[in-house]
Image: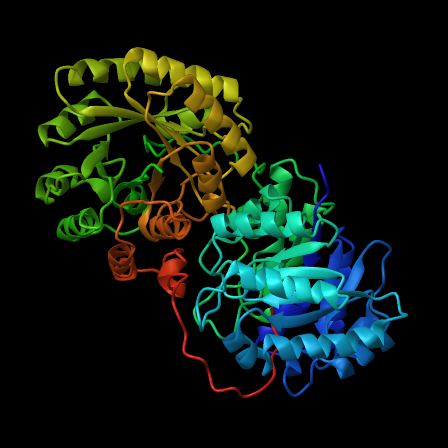
Length: 311
Length: 311
């Protein structure tokens, strides 16, 4: 059975939506702790304009400050050529481009249509050619758009084809606002893996409507082995008020490990890092295993005081 | 595709663990609202000793006070012969017996070994013979025990066989403290449905470690069509501190409806009832769809103020 590859996105996707700025040295400490747990990749930051995302204005200092570890890829979000140059100068392993599957979300999120995004990506790919940096693209709203609704699977497949044509090496299918359901996920993943068996596809779920782990299960059943996830379930989406965050890394790792699927992750170590998040971000996190303990947690038998039948 | 049958357990499983007593007329209003949503069954209360569960001390008044509706079965938890007689006198459609799969949980929860529970059930079945009340048994800790750990599937199958032998008509497999994982659920459900194809099996999950919906998905994939669920995710387990509640009815209905699986439930109506819970129980509930809206919820496009790439 193939080992899963978990891409931890809390330092980027989680922290960029927090109200407060997490100090650079605390970000570095978080990422260093995460990279010691066996995660395959960590999305460390975003090389965006500091004005657009002040929470991540320390992108260079973070990437230069973290301890690099054999086997743990450091990836960063890159919105444009300038961001790509900044990222390359710091020696990242991977850059993650982002575009929307739907026009309205692209306009809102990036001020670009998918066609404009593809043009921009082509310029970025020229800049990375010759380097050994891996170029991934995240396709937002691949399972539905909060503004226009359904995004036809044929449209998603078309965009994937164009991304691969211009030289993108890996693709992340993103359920940006938690609209995906397991039937839809299973179907799209099967189609995509059958059509591009050599491209590494990653699935990025949100737990907005409680389906995060069910969707991850459906993707895995379809053959997917790479997942984005966010420690503690940090994250969310600025355009979906009321929504909870990304699928929680330790809950995802826990589920698959309980199923006997190897994630390569030391869950105890990961839970210990997750337990530091409330102090770091100033609020509770939605993660559940960190509160309830792993399924193999044992309780002492209470003193028997009465009959309380409860199945 | 078979319509799912959802058994709503919040009035019993949810309210029995709340600190406060919910007034009888409010319980009746809740159940009446629930029975108008298309749910197949409602576990309305528990005919337990009022001293053991004072929250449900009004069992008779509740069952006698609710409006009975064609197609909505009223089931009640019954711990012993006395409870059975009380339930029968109120004209319920179904009684739900409860026993543990594990000795230590049985001792703690019921002060009985599984063998003692089976003896007690036999006496109850004598009392119901001749009536047309349906007798269901809930098998707690069928996926693991918080005190002794693993419960071998062979042991669960053995207990199911004994329940069927003494005349129990339906069986609910309960993941009492949220220890089940989808691989385990799929495997046990397949075995059980293959061995007893004519017995109605219901699955009862908790979302303690976030796997509630993933487990329901795995059960459904194995052929299960009957689920217990609790409005708002109310419920929990007194012996698993830190644990969240039962799998949330509206989140479960939402997932299956999104997948194109008919539940017979009017989700809008169900969400409206769920929205009344915080005022009823005095705290927020863990349900997610009631907060985020259904997956087909559309947002107005915000005014575009800046570039905020976020897959």
